[in-house]
Image 1 (cartoon, rainbow, N blue to C red):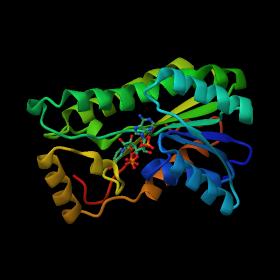
Image 2: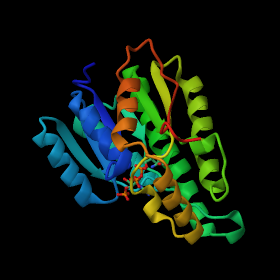
Image 3: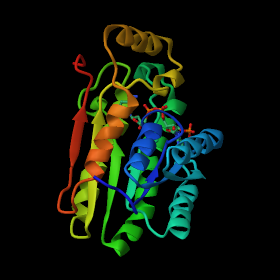
Image 4: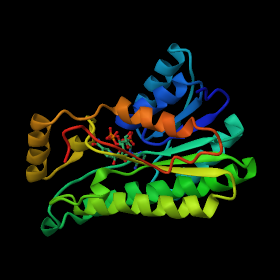
Length: 246
Ligand code: NDP
């Protein structure tokens, strides 16, 4: 499949799944606009993409800030003329028992994982409607389907991503816009390194010892599959887990 001529915006592209997704989409010919807060990493990624023969641009953006998220999409349209693919990937997973009441971390997860999907989505809808085409890809998690101890708030945010994705899909199905939810299991990225709760850190370390995690490229391949389909196809959901994950 070729994505030549398509413009793809990837949030949270400075590491992990977003980073791999940007590289994979660029390898198929898409112009990738890589966004996130850590500008140095975005610049390094864009250089890598260009060295590999691709086309990349960077945009530093905090997706929890509605103004920044909206300006980011508007700027991409000014610079590149269109947005064919929006990958809402930015996310945080700060696991802990609800009983601990780490309310700042709950707010951060809700801000990034839910509002950080809604703001760019809201900004891109008029752009894709005017084009009569586009695909919005939202990264949920298997946590949305199976709540575990310590993962309540994270699971709730990822269930929200799945729920709002389906609503958006139904709202836009007459506009030529597709919506895909990717539902990955455990992936080997820096996501869990931001956890502050000792019990949760221990749980992740034990999981890593007992199971081979997915690599970010495995999830990136799922995104490429979803956005590379003919316009009549909407890949609504893809679940991808490590073989050993319950
Ligand atoms: P990483 O921590 O490697 O990547 C998270 C990305 O989100 C970073 O690029 C980070 O960039 C960005 N981000 C965080 N906060 C903000 C913000 N306020 N504004 C903009 N960008 C932000 O983790 P993963 O690659 O694993 O995670 C990517 C997505 O995949 C997340 O939504 C996660 O929930 C989901 N997922 C991950 C799984 C896993 O096991 N790893 C499993 C299932 C789903 P920066 O700090 O530069 O802003």
